[in-house]
Length: 216
Image (cartoon, rainbow, N blue to C red):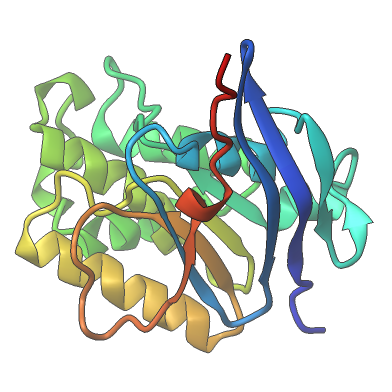
Protein backbone atom coordinates (compact mmCIF):
# COMPACT_ATOMS: atom_id res chain seq x y z
CA UNK A 1 0.00 0.00 0.00
CA UNK A 2 1.52 3.38 -0.99
CA UNK A 3 2.18 5.98 1.66
CA UNK A 4 -0.64 8.52 2.11
CA UNK A 5 -0.28 12.13 1.03
CA UNK A 6 0.34 14.84 3.63
CA UNK A 7 -1.95 17.82 3.02
CA UNK A 8 -1.89 21.26 4.60
CA UNK A 9 -5.16 23.06 3.92
CA UNK A 10 -5.43 26.84 4.43
CA UNK A 11 -3.12 26.56 7.45
CA UNK A 12 -2.59 29.53 9.74
CA UNK A 13 -0.43 29.79 12.85
CA UNK A 14 -0.48 32.26 15.71
CA UNK A 15 2.28 32.85 18.24
CA UNK A 16 1.01 34.94 21.11
CA UNK A 17 -0.80 37.92 19.59
CA UNK A 18 1.05 37.63 16.28
CA UNK A 19 -0.25 35.74 13.26
CA UNK A 20 2.91 34.16 11.81
CA UNK A 21 1.49 32.91 8.54
CA UNK A 22 -1.83 32.08 6.88
CA UNK A 23 -3.27 30.47 3.78
CA UNK A 24 -0.65 27.72 3.56
CA UNK A 25 -1.59 25.06 1.00
CA UNK A 26 0.90 22.22 0.56
CA UNK A 27 0.87 18.59 -0.51
CA UNK A 28 3.68 16.08 0.09
CA UNK A 29 2.83 12.81 -1.69
CA UNK A 30 4.70 9.53 -1.36
CA UNK A 31 8.20 9.64 -2.78
CA UNK A 32 8.51 13.42 -2.51
CA UNK A 33 11.16 15.56 -0.82
CA UNK A 34 9.70 18.95 0.13
CA UNK A 35 12.08 21.75 1.15
CA UNK A 36 10.35 24.33 3.34
CA UNK A 37 12.14 27.64 2.88
CA UNK A 38 11.75 31.07 4.44
CA UNK A 39 13.65 33.80 6.21
CA UNK A 40 14.34 33.68 9.94
CA UNK A 41 11.17 34.25 11.92
CA UNK A 42 8.83 33.28 9.09
CA UNK A 43 7.52 30.32 11.11
CA UNK A 44 9.21 27.28 9.56
CA UNK A 45 9.68 25.47 12.88
CA UNK A 46 6.16 26.42 13.93
CA UNK A 47 4.79 24.90 10.72
CA UNK A 48 6.69 21.66 11.32
CA UNK A 49 5.25 21.49 14.82
CA UNK A 50 1.75 21.81 13.36
CA UNK A 51 2.52 18.97 10.96
CA UNK A 52 3.69 16.73 13.80
CA UNK A 53 0.66 17.53 15.95
CA UNK A 54 2.74 19.17 18.69
CA UNK A 55 0.85 22.44 18.15
CA UNK A 56 -2.61 23.29 16.90
CA UNK A 57 -3.27 25.69 14.01
CA UNK A 58 -5.10 28.96 14.34
CA UNK A 59 -7.20 27.68 11.45
CA UNK A 60 -6.93 25.15 8.67
CA UNK A 61 -6.20 21.43 8.78
CA UNK A 62 -3.36 18.93 8.52
CA UNK A 63 -4.51 15.73 6.80
CA UNK A 64 -2.87 12.34 6.30
CA UNK A 65 -4.50 10.36 3.55
CA UNK A 66 -7.48 12.71 3.69
CA UNK A 67 -8.02 12.25 7.43
CA UNK A 68 -7.12 14.66 10.27
CA UNK A 69 -3.85 13.72 11.97
CA UNK A 70 -5.27 14.26 15.46
CA UNK A 71 -5.88 10.88 17.07
CA UNK A 72 -4.56 8.93 14.07
CA UNK A 73 -2.52 5.96 15.29
CA UNK A 74 -1.39 5.22 11.74
CA UNK A 75 0.02 8.73 11.41
CA UNK A 76 1.95 8.44 14.66
CA UNK A 77 3.36 5.11 13.52
CA UNK A 78 4.47 6.43 10.12
CA UNK A 79 5.84 9.77 11.35
CA UNK A 80 9.47 10.39 12.28
CA UNK A 81 10.21 13.86 13.65
CA UNK A 82 13.68 15.19 14.40
CA UNK A 83 13.62 18.75 15.66
CA UNK A 84 16.38 21.31 15.77
CA UNK A 85 17.20 20.15 19.31
CA UNK A 86 18.65 16.66 19.32
CA UNK A 87 16.59 15.33 22.26
CA UNK A 88 19.34 13.02 23.51
CA UNK A 89 19.92 11.81 27.07
CA UNK A 90 23.26 13.35 28.02
CA UNK A 91 24.11 10.82 30.74
CA UNK A 92 23.45 7.78 28.55
CA UNK A 93 25.99 6.32 26.18
CA UNK A 94 25.54 6.87 22.45
CA UNK A 95 24.14 3.36 22.00
CA UNK A 96 21.85 3.64 25.03
CA UNK A 97 20.48 6.96 23.84
CA UNK A 98 19.72 5.63 20.36
CA UNK A 99 18.17 2.48 21.88
CA UNK A 100 15.89 4.67 23.99
CA UNK A 101 14.70 6.54 20.89
CA UNK A 102 14.11 3.24 19.08
CA UNK A 103 12.08 1.75 21.94
CA UNK A 104 9.76 4.71 22.47
CA UNK A 105 8.95 4.67 18.75
CA UNK A 106 8.48 0.91 18.58
CA UNK A 107 11.51 0.26 16.38
CA UNK A 108 14.08 -2.56 16.49
CA UNK A 109 16.60 -1.80 19.26
CA UNK A 110 18.71 -4.95 18.84
CA UNK A 111 22.45 -4.47 19.30
CA UNK A 112 23.31 -5.29 15.69
CA UNK A 113 20.67 -2.92 14.34
CA UNK A 114 21.83 -0.06 16.57
CA UNK A 115 25.47 -0.59 15.64
CA UNK A 116 24.60 -0.57 11.95
CA UNK A 117 22.66 2.69 12.35
CA UNK A 118 25.54 4.34 14.20
CA UNK A 119 27.98 3.10 11.60
CA UNK A 120 25.91 4.89 8.95
CA UNK A 121 27.10 8.15 10.49
CA UNK A 122 30.62 6.98 11.38
CA UNK A 123 29.93 6.64 15.11
CA UNK A 124 30.90 3.02 15.71
CA UNK A 125 34.02 4.01 17.66
CA UNK A 126 31.96 6.35 19.89
CA UNK A 127 29.13 3.94 20.66
CA UNK A 128 30.11 3.53 24.34
CA UNK A 129 30.91 7.21 24.92
CA UNK A 130 28.55 9.27 27.10
CA UNK A 131 26.50 11.63 24.97
CA UNK A 132 27.72 14.60 27.04
CA UNK A 133 31.26 14.05 25.75
CA UNK A 134 30.29 14.45 22.09
CA UNK A 135 30.87 17.46 19.87
CA UNK A 136 27.91 19.38 18.45
CA UNK A 137 28.29 17.63 15.12
CA UNK A 138 28.43 14.21 16.78
CA UNK A 139 25.28 15.02 18.76
CA UNK A 140 23.54 15.71 15.47
CA UNK A 141 24.81 12.48 13.93
CA UNK A 142 23.44 10.41 16.83
CA UNK A 143 20.03 12.04 16.49
CA UNK A 144 20.03 11.44 12.73
CA UNK A 145 21.08 7.80 13.21
CA UNK A 146 17.44 7.38 14.28
CA UNK A 147 16.60 7.63 10.55
CA UNK A 148 18.89 4.70 9.75
CA UNK A 149 16.64 2.49 11.90
CA UNK A 150 13.79 3.00 9.42
CA UNK A 151 13.40 0.38 6.69
CA UNK A 152 9.88 1.14 5.47
CA UNK A 153 8.14 4.11 3.85
CA UNK A 154 7.07 6.84 6.23
CA UNK A 155 6.89 10.60 6.62
CA UNK A 156 10.09 12.24 7.90
CA UNK A 157 9.73 15.76 9.27
CA UNK A 158 13.19 17.24 9.82
CA UNK A 159 14.07 20.67 11.21
CA UNK A 160 17.48 21.81 9.90
CA UNK A 161 18.85 18.24 9.64
CA UNK A 162 22.08 19.38 7.92
CA UNK A 163 22.95 21.80 10.71
CA UNK A 164 26.36 21.12 12.38
CA UNK A 165 27.26 18.35 9.92
CA UNK A 166 30.57 18.24 8.08
CA UNK A 167 30.89 17.31 4.40
CA UNK A 168 30.97 13.59 5.20
CA UNK A 169 27.92 13.77 7.46
CA UNK A 170 26.02 15.82 4.88
CA UNK A 171 26.73 13.19 2.24
CA UNK A 172 25.60 10.36 4.47
CA UNK A 173 22.35 12.13 5.33
CA UNK A 174 21.68 12.93 1.67
CA UNK A 175 22.13 9.24 0.83
CA UNK A 176 19.62 8.27 3.52
CA UNK A 177 17.09 10.75 2.15
CA UNK A 178 17.49 9.51 -1.43
CA UNK A 179 17.11 5.87 -0.31
CA UNK A 180 14.02 6.76 1.71
CA UNK A 181 12.51 8.55 -1.26
CA UNK A 182 13.24 5.59 -3.57
CA UNK A 183 11.23 3.22 -1.35
CA UNK A 184 8.23 5.54 -1.41
CA UNK A 185 8.89 7.58 1.72
CA UNK A 186 8.27 11.32 1.93
CA UNK A 187 10.23 14.09 3.64
CA UNK A 188 9.34 17.61 4.73
CA UNK A 189 12.42 19.48 5.89
CA UNK A 190 13.95 22.90 6.47
CA UNK A 191 17.50 23.93 5.70
CA UNK A 192 19.37 27.21 5.46
CA UNK A 193 22.35 25.43 3.88
CA UNK A 194 22.96 24.51 0.22
CA UNK A 195 21.82 20.98 -0.58
CA UNK A 196 23.65 18.01 -2.02
CA UNK A 197 23.31 17.74 -5.80
CA UNK A 198 21.85 14.23 -5.33
CA UNK A 199 18.74 15.79 -3.80
CA UNK A 200 16.03 17.25 -6.02
CA UNK A 201 13.35 18.55 -3.65
CA UNK A 202 10.21 20.49 -4.39
CA UNK A 203 10.62 23.93 -2.82
CA UNK A 204 7.90 25.68 -0.84
CA UNK A 205 8.50 29.30 0.17
CA UNK A 206 6.76 30.21 3.41
CA UNK A 207 7.63 33.92 3.01
CA UNK A 208 4.73 34.22 0.58
CA UNK A 209 2.32 33.40 3.41
CA UNK A 210 3.82 35.46 6.23
CA UNK A 211 1.19 37.69 7.73
CA UNK A 212 2.01 41.39 7.51
CA UNK A 213 1.39 43.55 10.61
CA UNK A 214 -1.47 45.96 10.20
CA UNK A 215 -0.65 49.67 10.14
CA UNK A 216 -2.24 51.84 12.75
